[in-house]
Image (cartoon, rainbow, N blue to C red; front, top):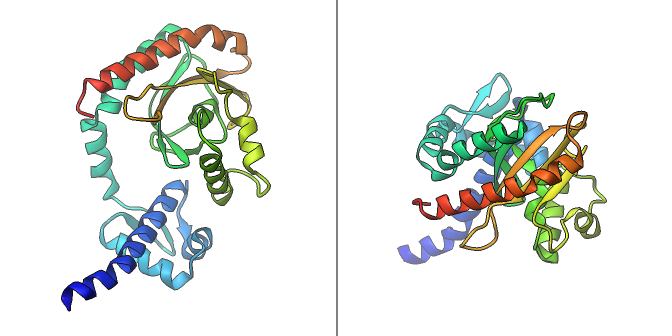
Length: 259
């Protein structure tokens, strides 16, 4: 009887967990605290359901409440510290990013893919200011910017459709953004890198290459970024061999690490 009850409750339990994770991820995307009504609307949930989830996240310290608004809580800090100190990715990538930035005078960045988004893991700022601040851990789309579009390389129609749908839902793209539109942004099948100009940020040009993976499609990418008034497309294309070499080197180092 107990086994039957556990079996019947399992789907509901998993659904609740999935919803809680989705709300937690959504709060990560906000640059400022948001009210319950905003979070509920963005999640497509009722306010009572969203409130119940927020209270569970609050008890775990993952979410904090300020007046009538919600933001990430202090429990994310220990998790972030453990990742940055123990995961091979940021630790191994840091010296490679420094060398790449010093050699090119450009901003060198490392991104990792999270589903239909990407996250900035590490960055070394170049000589020229980009005119904006991109915090470590910021979630960004796969549909804009060279470091996002490089992950579209090799994706089939089903995956591209899912990415386009998520990008619309998260308001990265307009409601008419469809399979045809995302295919137009994907690199050519034989491309080894992607270049973007004035896409995610105005006045910015960037080149990105995926870090080869021995366990399936790439989930990390390196990029070089600079202001358009000092960096041309030809300049970035000339730096492509250095970027690709750095990506291969990082891939080899990760393969030899506990990763």
